[in-house]
Amino acid sequence: MSKKEKNRVNVVYSTNPNFKFEEENETQHEPLKPNQEQLKVYLDRLGGGKLLSRVTGFSGKTGDIEILGKLLKQKCGVGGSVKDREILIQGDQREKILVLLLKEGYKAKKAGG
Image (tube, rainbow, N blue to C red; front, side, top):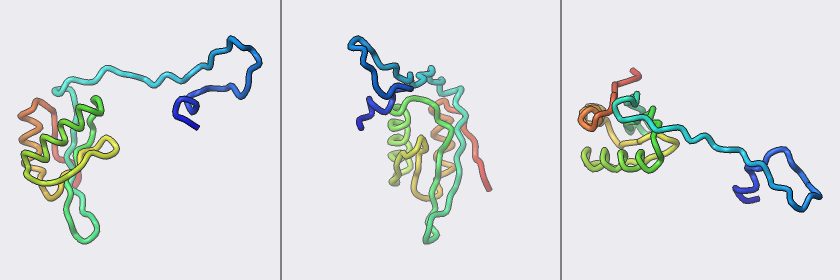
């Protein structure tokens, strides 16, 4: 079943040749400005004792979070990725990330223990 067919609502079969399927409209809300974002920077420990800095709370477009993730990886000089609307940066880079996010105009703070 294709993605298009998964969005169909409440119709199994119709004999009407002019019938049009109702589709669920995915909500497209206006992205927040950087100074309205409430980003939180966490430090997580992965298996094997490796550290990971995680940025959550981004509500903008997917392309924007990819660009921000790429910028943070470049400025910190480490690897990372963007998954499930979170930016993952290798190592304990919280201080650098906080400075960079504030410099870019985002509201950000440390979170967690």
